[in-house]
Amino acid sequence: MEHYNVEQKIQEFIAKIEAKNPNEPEFLQAVKEVAVTVIPFISTRPQYNGMKLLERMAEPERTIIFRVPWVDDNNEIQVNRGFRIQMNSAIGPYKGGIRFHPTVNLSVLKFLAFEQTFKNSLTTLPMGGGKGGADFDPQGKSDMEIMRFCQAFMSELCKYIGPETDVPAGDIGVGAREIGYLFGQYKKIRNEFTGVLTGKGLAYGGSLIRPEATGYGVVYFAEQMLKTINEDFKGKTVCVSGFGNVAWGVVKKVEELGGKVLTISGPDGYIYDKDGITGEKVDYMLELRSSGNNRAEDFLKKFPNVEFHAGKRPWEVKCDVAIPAATQNELDLDDAKKLVANGVVCVTEAANMPSSLEAINYFLDNKVLFSPGKASNAGGVATSGLEMTQNSIRLNWSSEEVDARLKEIMIGIHKACRDYGTEEDGYVNYVKGANIAGFVKVAEAMLAQGVV
Image (cartoon, rainbow, N blue to C red):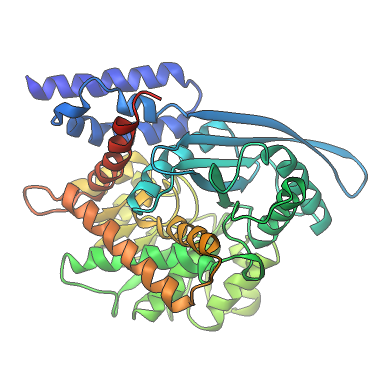
């Protein structure tokens, strides 16, 4: 009977969320994934009874949508739409990236802000959840156009953010250059030099190893996952998707730990290199990205011996460890079946929600070690939190010190997921563990602060 009640509660909760947020598939997917694991946990804790904690977490504290008019190089006026979702501030100022991409809409940003709340909670640092961006496409734009857009975007956003209120960072389409322009405009308007953004350049308050941090953190997390079955990266084959900052950090750290990365990918297809993506090839990933290029095929210009598979995803390649590091829903049920059939032992998400729900369930049913992005890719935001600390004390730590703190945080996140996610047969369900561990800290803070 109890089981039926919990199932009924899950269905009722999801029905309410669907009715309230129609036409928002990404957001609904993220909320459902959390509800299925967290509602059974809530039902075992009397102090949470009737407090509507998950309902409150699924409703942003504030949703800001604004017009961004700017002038392009042909003196034509362009109009984009800007967003900031301030999801939850129970444990600290809102914290989460800014994304510039044509696919940016309310659903995508609400899903990212919701995930970010749990991810930030897992880091143990005092950061709430937020996310923002614009439907602006930086591809093919000149430096001056990007600067003018960033200035126009920040002229409105600056009214809602600040070092004690909301501290944005970069995300897809927002790298060091964009952060610099955004920071410059904020400083000019507010006439103050504060740690209002993270991912800044080293010359004006940035942290060492921030660009590599997400990728490094993912690999540290995967290393802990492998340890649960008495394995490590030495001699392991690894398939990676994407070739942005995150994939770059992953490839560097896997190589350092003795693994061999066989693939990277772009929207046009994937690169397979039987010798492993090492040395110059890793540097070339950065070179391609900094030229504003996201075509994997261009790898052949410099390394003609690698294979390029047009229009395909790398999950058909046999590997021990799979690390999706590109974008949401890039790994579906068919991909999951191929990976499992090929003997994958560990799948560690490096992007936000890159695996579909069906793929995740398939991995869990087949007892593959699987970690959701909110746990394994939290290294980026953790290092952003360390950047905030360095800004507050007006000191810079060495890269060794930042790396050591990052590793410590990832080991801590892994332990929390293991504590809440270990099942009776000893299998660690990281999805359940991450959701519950992330939820508990936010829930306790919300209970303490009353209905606000």
